[in-house]
Length: 265
Image 1 (cartoon, one colour):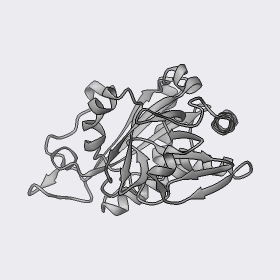
Image 2 (spheres, helix red, strand yellow):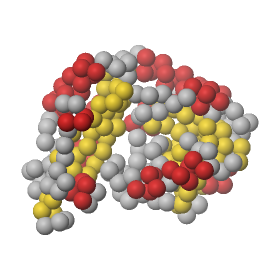
Image 3 (cartoon, helix red, strand yellow):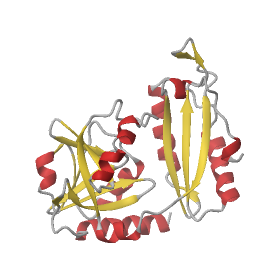
Image 4 (cartoon, helix red, strand yellow):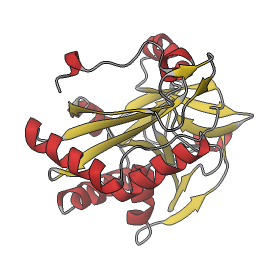
């Protein structure tokens, strides 16, 4: 149905208590990109919060295909939202009566200049609650938008106790010499992140580990990844230049590998 006709109860526990999960899925060649991986994550998130997904993988996949055909966008972004449904006694919910919906949107590219010339990040000390799953709690990310804009950054990079974690809506990678390094713990391990690690195996040494803030300032190259933005080169953090302050060779290599992969998907 049209978005303006879709309704959610004002008693929904997702609205009243922020209790719910989220998945962001994009398409490649008019097909949901890495759908089984997204389903795995969505089911893990649902299990963690004791929520019930009311439809099978097959049924949801059929609905996604229908939405792709109905909209006929060149590329579609999907947002899957699952909450506990109507609240009971303020903080309880009925597991068998969840709220679940899929929102389809036309994918909008970031300005081309960002991909060719790079963007900036600004850091902020923050550790997300339940970082291993994707909840609908984006309070900190949203509250930091003025801070992000003030620093002319594309995203906020979360750090905790001198460790670099993830960006507010992306995963973080850096190159040091011939090594591709990414944070592993206390983060949400996104699907684009997973694909990057798969593609990089034949071309670079890979390290998944804790990453210190000091390491980042001395990185040769940095990029962030996300389902709705692909790979975004980063040329400065907190107004400090990264490497040559231009899109590096390693980042360009990964961008080409990822682009080739999505074209053939």
